[in-house]
Length: 232
Image 1 (cartoon, rainbow, N blue to C red):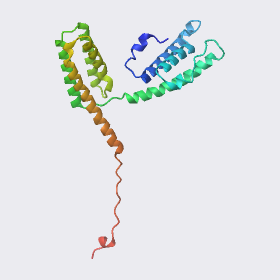
Image 2 (image 1 turned 120 degrees about the vertical axis):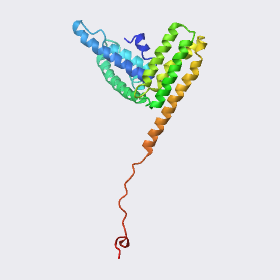
Image 3 (image 1 turned 135 degrees about the vertical axis):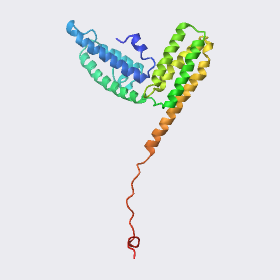
Image 4 (image 1 turned 60 degrees about the vertical axis):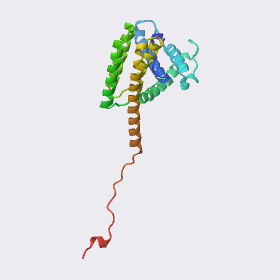
């Protein structure tokens, strides 16, 4: 089964990401159960359980290639195992395709050194705001952790664009709870967001230029008239 705590780790993912990660988790549990079945009378998690979990995820996240044509069979009826096994073939194919698609979307952007330094400076300012704010210790600890997490993402070769999102959402929640001393954060986070936006625009512009640029053709020597070659 897929448990609530499994879903929590994917809560910030897109629906496509949630599906392929849940499918991969269900497949992993199926394979683990098969190895354990040698010690018991039978697997605790079988093809039917896999199909029940993955088909429900496909219906929830609108994965039409699986949600529309497939129906969960009754356990134990004729050919139920073959149906579940065929579903797993389709689900694995769809999951792999979504994995590659999401991997391309989440490549992030390459921040140049001046942009990294600017964002790091702004994150230092955020730490100072948290330190001075009169808010609960658990809120401070949560914000410090998110700042450090964002700094680690900025230090990578490519930074995912959603990296600042969790920090922003958490701050908005705290402001809604009355933590008004954190309001200076808003402007600083907006400046961080603008830095990401400028870097993204720059990278996309460079990508368009490289696609539009035609390879230059080297011109061969121009034919010359005999008058140009023969002199008297």
